[in-house]
Amino acid sequence: MSSFQCGLLFYVREGPDRGRTFALEHRELTLGRARTAGDRAPGWVLLNDPAVGRIHAEMAWDDSVKAYHLVWRSETPVLVNGTEITDKVIRVGDQIKLGSTTIDLMTAAAVAAANAETQKIKIPSPSEVKAKPVIVLNRTLEILSGAESGEVLPLRGNKIQVGGPETSGVPEDRTWWDQDVILQDKGFPYRCMSWSWVEAERGYQVSMLRPVEVSISFERSSDGMDWMSEMPSGQGAFVVCRDGDRIIVGKTALQLRISEPE
Image (tube, rainbow, N blue to C red; front, side):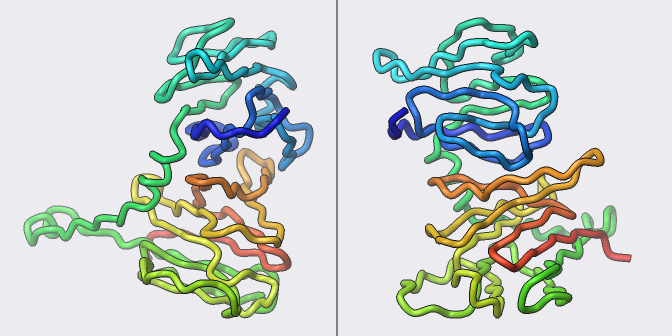
């Protein structure tokens, strides 16, 4: 299946893969269950959801309508906007449910724009402070392995740039961040990741700033199981990193910790 550009992606709103995005880069796609956590394959949207069939649905791009046809292929149903379907043209804004997973069809441009917006912080009035104390969450990155294993880094910013030691040949960007986290692991690419705090998610949207050669994966423990996937790198792609989630970059493993102050 040849790669092409339609500018669309899937955002997983609910389910074990919550927060993941999948760039839709093939005319024909198969939606199904991963055999092993973290499986990836061209032309597949592989979900870490045991309630999803091995081949749950298929998609085919229709040039005449500039949209995908979604075709049901499993014993358990596929719902689009709450209605069971067998074959349906899906468009931006549609919500797809298969197994315990809910997916939004979005444009990559819209996700990228939302990801780039500056986080707005409301300064409470004195009356609001008296009525309800403002809770500032403790946010840290624990280095589980790598050159600085055991270190705990406080996260004070809402827009954070994360990377390894300075490397020649990487162009300097305008200063869009309010915290710069530089790790000493030489295998960790310089200024390669953006961490943007999202209050409603109680987590960070983590995305790649540029292509890198090192392996980067995302891990989450949920319902007694460990889920793993490769870090998405397409335009507008991100994962939502919450308390306890782990990002592994080469030999360095980072774990996000979020807690309320004691």
